[in-house]
Image (cartoon, rainbow, N blue to C red; front, side, top):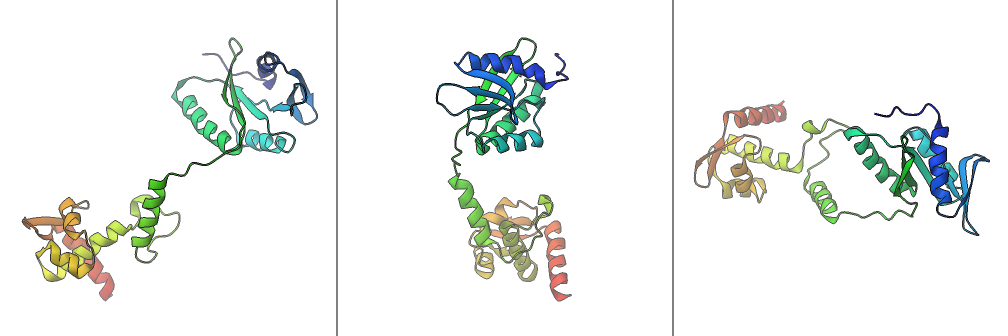
Length: 227
């Protein structure tokens, strides 16, 4: 494996050759920019050289966008899964920021342009928005603390299951339709049949009762309410 360079200057010859091959005149260390490339009357291209992805590199590149929209960041091309993951994530970040991204294979100077600068147009995922708004609407109150560990969150589904458990605790084994009517949870029968939390046992078709685990949970709820 090729060791990473000790100086950013190792990136300059491959980047210069890449840009000159596209008809640009290229000069280093012009003003505050590491590399500036000009072609005819087009806006200049600015390239900021760094030995790896970093927040400082992103900040520097964003600052150069005050001069031109054509800003690239090149980094040495690594190997292995860790670099591949970093490249994928940083490509997504650069796309959002309107930055170009280039990798340089140092052993032979091979360059690859992964991303050209362009205005970012976010593509919203409608199913995710629908799920988010459905969960917001169904959740009763605001039972969680922002930033809490996700495994301890109270979701609308969990609230529905807790209501079903409370009814079975007070009514005993019941038909799913009765539990739905008493709780207002229209999906009560399916919820108890799926038994995601292990709180319910099926007595016979359409009739459910609490499992030992469900009984403990329901007793805790009633105890908290009475306390």
